[in-house]
Length: 133
Ligand code: HEC
Image (cartoon, rainbow, N blue to C red; front, top):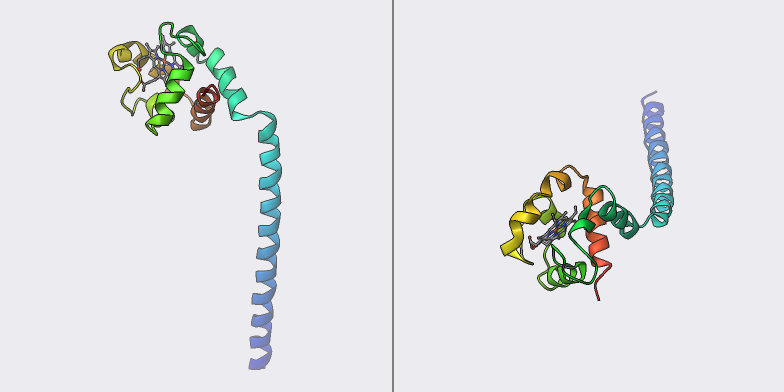
């Protein structure tokens, strides 16, 4: 009688393991297809939409020339050179490194950027870097 119980337990353990592996495999499949969906709306494209849309960053930033704020090419270059983090800056948790003398003007936007999700901020960052020459 004892033996049957032990065999039953071993069998149960084995069949559970099999199920775990199976569902793990399925999980991997979904991740891949999600990645394919994300490819359609790339972070750069989403970032560009926010930059020109609800972020209204375009009011002060142009791609290749300084207007009120530095150009995106300058920002991208300096952030890359210094290995700095645009997302952290936009959360209001960083230091200005491009044009600190004008920081007060940029600061007014943190009310907008702080309300954005991490994904939106990362998309903005991707868009800024996509202008790197
Ligand atoms: C009212 C004008 C204005 C708007 C709108 C604006 N910026 Fe700026 N931005 C500036 C100015 C001026 C600077 C230069 C000061 C500085 O470097 O912090 C700057 C600097 C920056 C920098 C470089 C920060 C650094 O380290 O020096 C980033 C990145 C940036 N802006 C991103 C954005 C994004 C993203 C948006 C839209 C959500 C935006 N800006 C909207 C005026 C603006």
